[in-house]
Image (cartoon, rainbow, N blue to C red):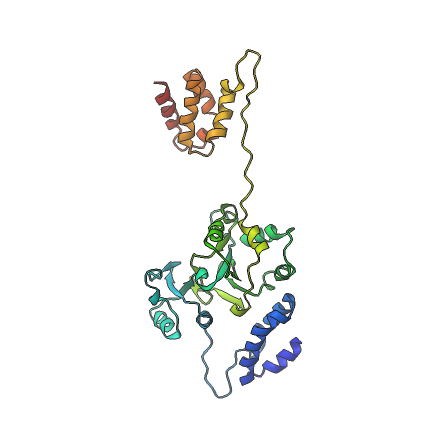
Length: 335
């Protein structure tokens, strides 16, 4: 079938554009995803694929125009920051070729869009080279979905990833923006998208946040669109649930309450007080942890020397840049 396609379209005559449009609109529904990915790769690599009609000086197609043709308004930007107040002035959004050319003539090379305004959801997978944690979001994503029961269609999308995915953008840093249709997203569901556990792995769901459009340039390097926007798959509930499910909470440390031989409770000992402080105050800042732990020592009748000796062995003290503040906090309780 791929051979028939290459014979039909390689000559670059008028039927080429029509056939290509037909394939992009029709084949995602009729072919297995792996074969569709091969077909799109053949389209992108075929000789003369973008050749103009004979005798016609046709300009090279602009990737940004693809968004406008799909009724996706663009936001002119610089260094990821919008150059217009698009929420307050929606009329300034780029919705046609003429407006796009006007901004290009001003030297603007970066453009974005808001997925939620177009019933889209973008899964942003960063390589991490430009992030502090340096983790690989693509590999982390594949590990996240590995072993989970996804629909057969989704499994096909990730069988030869990313080439097998119907529509995505490759970023200059090697990251990926996977495009999904998401017409059913409610505000309650959208609030689940800020998943700190996944964000730390450079996996991020972007819905109301601006996403850089393919065809934009970053430091002279282009965001490249693969596949077709028309082939964007629906975000399935199983994948969405996997990506938005809250991570399991770590079990709380239980300070020991059993009676000692001398009749005192364990949490009345220095070790028990530290255990109790960890349970009650581990989510606080280091200063507050130290201060509140000193209060527990004081209420238990422990000496200031004992409080200092135990508190200064805690990570909350050892990790402080200003360790002298620990002594100040303890002194303020015992004065």
